[in-house]
Amino acid sequence: MTDTIFAPATAAGRAAVAVVRLSGSDSAGAVRALAGALPQPRVAALRALKGADGAPIDKALVLWFPGPASYTGEDCAELHVHGGSAVVSAVLEALAAQGLRLAEPGEFTRRAFENGKLDLAQAEGVADLIEAETEAQRRQALDQLEGALGQAQHRWREALVEALAMFEAAVDFPDEEVPADVAARARPVLEALLGELESAIAHVKRAEQVREGFRIALIGAPNAGKSTLLNALARREAAIVTATPGTTRDIIEVPLQFAGYKAVVADTAGLRETADEIEAEGVRRAKAWAAGADMRVWVVDGSAEEGGLPPEALHPHDLCLINKTDLAPGPNTGRALVEARASGVEVLRLSARAAADLAAVEAALARRVVDALAGGELPTATRLRHRELLAEAAGRVRSALGFEDRLELAAEDVRLAARALDRITGRIDPEDVLDRVFSSFCIGK
Image (cartoon, rainbow, N blue to C red; front, side, top):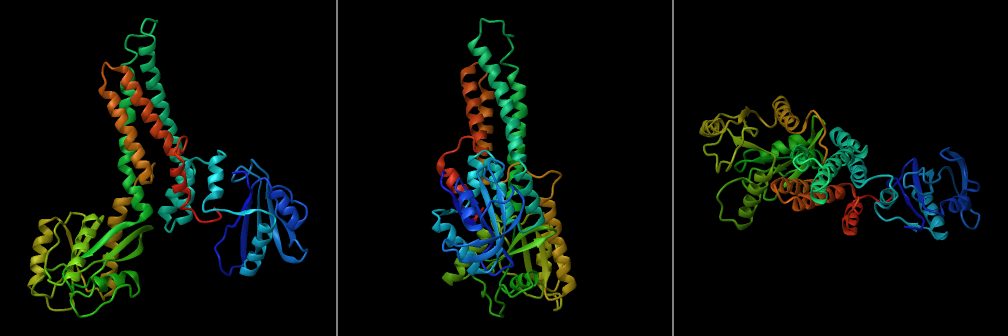
């Protein structure tokens, strides 16, 4: 990465201000060509920007960040111009005319990683911070950006180095003045480390739920009121509501927030036996989505004579809603109460069109989301990639503990465990992994 790159760092479209970033060895020359003399480092200066023909482009605030004291570790600059699309286009064209290259997605942050300004886990925290929609996502991403996972990885690696030193001392210097129990001293170190790794793995799911959203499935018979409830929760017409049973056939997902946490609430096809091939596929998808959801909301038409197919599995943290309480209750209410109580599921009675009842449902959902996602400490690892590498490291540590007398094999497992941990922060990582991580970034970051 020796060429100089540029990109808009703000979203396209009309705005008061747009920011164009530069990074690379030719940044100083590019700024001089557009704005005259360089400003003092990290001090904003008002400059008139001109094109190669001397024609004025805009008046802008120019900031200069000489490397290595910059985001990427290279010479960097920012041009704060007026946010009209014509102004931004003119600035980008002027930079391209100087031989600079438009940055690829995530290239600024990748250069920061390559130059040792961030580790790979921190770079992922940058991406998560940009994508954060809720307060919980923001806090989790900021914790990772500040190096929480990297610090934990360093601590875990130090424990492995300590254990490895003990194994190698016993293997390489058996006749020296080395304590006879030196290899045995590695066991408590590895056992304590294994406990920490398993704890970190257990909390990754919670972190993924914070990032991606707590999945809530609305399930029940046709015309139970699932779509009406979804529209009420979303405060918009997200799903079609008709009196015709089986209107909803595909999964309709709506992102919502409960108590500062993201949730994805899904309206699903009504559960019933049907000969219609399309509706049957909708029922199959509904069951599959509900089975993989973090909780299920069983919506029951309390006025109906029959309730259709009950959910295949309810869990104590799920919720049963007896809907249509504004109508006369039917036998379906009693059957649903028996089923829900047998599964230990909380039951709420409501009319999906009543504001007070909707508030009670929202409160019940918020309690469950908070119970599942809130914790004393933020999870250290937050992604599937982290979980897989932690599981690999834990497996190697577990294997090392199983070699009582074959210390050479135990030492090799410890080395491989350290290698897996190093890949979390990118100390060693194949190029395709780096490409996959940084390609998810927006251009200009």
